[in-house]
Length: 147
Image 1 (cartoon, rainbow, N blue to C red):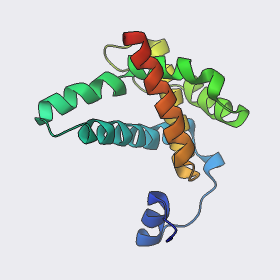
Image 2 (image 1 turned 90 degrees about the vertical axis):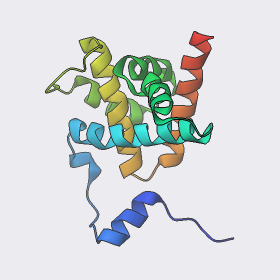
Image 3 (image 1 turned 180 degrees about the vertical axis):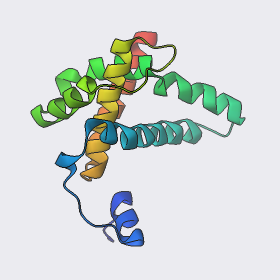
């Protein structure tokens, strides 16, 4: 069986990127990349549920990527985080934001930023399996509350 190579490793190799110490990155930098990773995973899930008009896909995606939903997921995941993950989440949550999302409270926005920082950290440390496991738990919890 052929060993698969992570997306991160493929990007680094293709563009000749050097290794960096992720611990030196600001929490908002981690949240920046984490936002993209989180949205990519949600969009992938939505698209894999079936072909649909783009506006329907977008409406379904927005349910899960808006700050209040991310904050709800983050709160549901707190007990799942390892001490290291909790520290990254808290750094992201406590970072001073440059703006606040519309339709979200400051608390929701900060919790969402913490979750995005953790997703960015897990991605950049090549721990996507863990990121996906956390997202799966979080998305299930949010769906249970809606049911």
